[in-house]
Image (cartoon, rainbow, N blue to C red; front, side, top):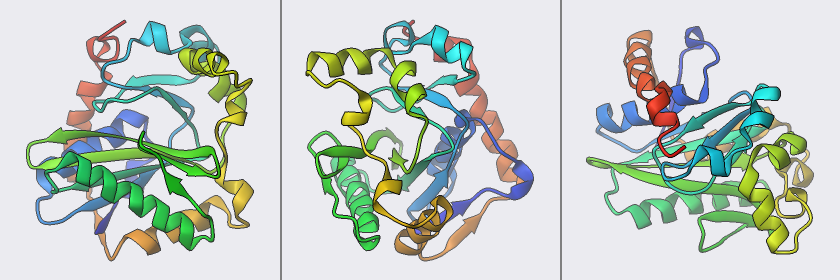
Length: 237
């Protein structure tokens, strides 16, 4: 599997750029499976079938400069920031369940090579002990599946707790007092820095690289525009 690399000249981008990169790769790079690792400034990402008003604390996000975007995959609402490692897997495997299974097992393999015992759940999550460290979602394009996930290395717990409205309600219904009791952070299980963990991920999952150029970036930016349209972001307001 080849690791996609975005040129330094492209700079630091908003979340929709990376979603567009996945889509560009799925449509234009035909010969092999691809892996992309990325990070974003504080952002809430909600699934294609979710209502912004019901799932996101919009006023809190606006007050704290947390961006809000919709993705094209299903699943729940998540918070991400520079302490999260975002993982994308673009595969020619046409069976979505198998693509999911392959990706989740890649994440588990990577964690176990860090000396961390991790397991999968039936809900596409990866746990350390009984706490979630990674969750994944998937969607299909012609000839490809895109699986993407968060990997919690470190994060702003106040933002995670308050930016996502239903997460807190669901936790309370289950008798869990805080998000911190349900999730765990990778930094608590390793002495490696975030950059060292990223290097280990590349070493474990990739057998080569594919460097994009600025012409590719321009094509990705055109796809990105579809994610930035208000009618897409607020599709189910």
